[in-house]
Amino acid sequence: KKVKMGEKNWTYDFLLTPDCTQEEMYNKVGEQTITDFTEGYNGTIFAYGQTGAGKTFTISGTGNFNYRGIIPRSITGIFQEIGGKPDYDIVTSVSYLEIYNETIFDLLAPASTFENGADITFQEDSKGNVTVKGLSKHAVNNEEEAFNLLFEGESNRTISEHKLNKVSTRSHCIFTMTLEMKSRVESSEKVITSKLNFVDLAGSERVKETGSTGLSLKEANYINKSLTFLEQVVVALTDKKRKEYIPYRQSKLTHILKDSIGGNCKTVMIANIWPEEPYIYETLSTLNFAKRMKNVVNEISVNIRLDTQALVKKLTKEIRELKQELAMHNTLTTGRQINYDPYTAEEQYEQQKIAMAFLFGKEEDINFESVRQAKELFNQCRIIYQKRCVPGKISEEEKVQQLERQKSLKEQKEEGDKGEMVGEVE
Image 1 (spheres, rainbow, N blue to C red):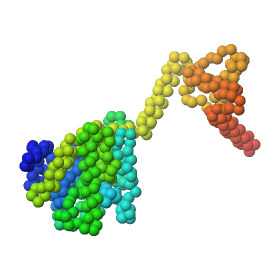
Image 2 (tube, rainbow, N blue to C red; image 1 turned 180 degrees about the vertical axis):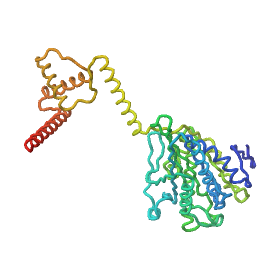
Image 3 (spheres, one colour; image 1 turned 45 degrees about the vertical axis):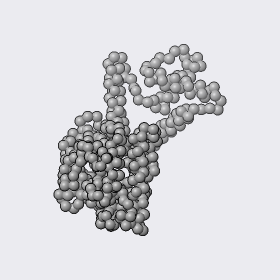
Image 4 (cartoon, one colour; image 1 turned 60 degrees about the horizontal axis):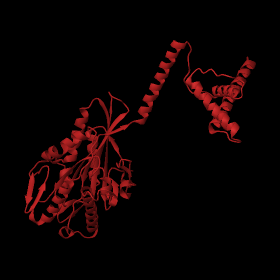
């Protein structure tokens, strides 16, 4: 639809009027995002707009069941989707953070940790994906456990009152759910991962209109500053000349949303406006920001990683089975059983004696029984060369072998001594 206001025109995916229900909002915004999330795609839903425009109501809702917001409805939808995937082992976890005056707080941390602020940092991998280190993650097995954590985090949020809003949120809050899915039918080492952010941004405001002073004024300055940095990131992403450098690290908010804005994520923005004449400039600012956001291009792909422990276990089993099959084949074709296990210290010593005899002319030919033996003989020739031709130099491998031989001989001597003692007792 095209929305016309004076001489301004904006193009958006859809427009919801003030009389729309919370269910209609979720159906438009959340339903498809939830489906994509449970298929392995990252997702972000965030609300942007001036203070008092209804962002928190849209994202979280109220205590009234009919007025519950996108997060609680999404939690229900996620566990319904999970219930429809019996062929997968699925692990779900929840985290909840707050950015208040450019300090990050873990809303699900113990009270002592929360009061002092969390030791939270950002870490990026080679693909540019941002991980929040130090933020607690809580495994949830059902929607009841997820709701309990959501309500706990909500009770720890920072709010205050001013002229435009009696319960104004004074921070940016991000509620995150993550999934790890492993098929019970297909390859067990392949793990599909995804994360879904619900972002309730603090509202931009004009301090003259809100009457903010003291601490509220300080909060407003931090809020407006971080939202300005967010706008600069969006402008840079849509400007082809500036796209080489995107200022994500200017603030905590832009850094943590790096995946969501210009990264591997299906992102939905909700522009909350206050459709009254006194707030026309704030409305224009919000609509212009939404127009810029619509031009940001994200690169989307399913997140797949390999479970290294499961992969090692699988490959070890395959190697063992192949060795058994090869040994059986050699026994049937040659009548002799060939060993494919690594050489012991004693066996290495025997191969070294054969190599010495060949190198110094005591033996004219060497009969190879297997490729395994040939490799070991070549290895022993190299060790002899390094020891004989480079004065004072013994390879690390030779040192290890010497220690292993000494250990083995010592064990054999101890076993012999035990045998003699048993004979004497008898």
